[in-house]
Length: 198
Image (cartoon, rainbow, N blue to C red; front, side, top):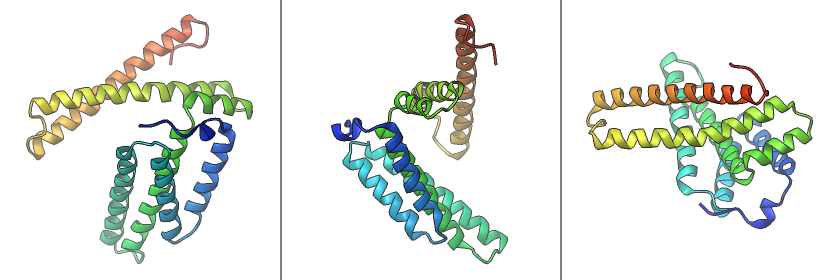
């Protein structure tokens, strides 16, 4: 993953946030799927041009495709008049949201975004929570990746039944680690006089 161009990195986070919100408003505003699809493709192309990892862009579009397909199947199963078209619209809107959020997070590091929010008058407890969440999301992503690789080595995904069991164990392990880390962080903050236990 490459760094964004220098002229993008020196932009104020409030400008990139305003740009992202404007793109979201355009992408989510209309009843047809073509505008959100155009926004999603534009944000994805900008992300690729400015150094975002292609795998992350593709994963975002894949998640939106799955969500849209499930929504379409639900509408068809319930016999609603909108049917598959509603699922297509929902999938396009989700793709736009994921692409815009991914582009914004690539262009604006969490600590820069938190500082900009503080400048806009957002309460410090919210910005600190945002910065901590962004920091530990990568930690948990690494822990989940390591656990999944260990499961793959042991043949944990050889068949549907074993794969479902492995995914459940992986989710439980990640949840337990997240809870332990939250408790440790709360205790460290309390020791510094910044707050009590959760």
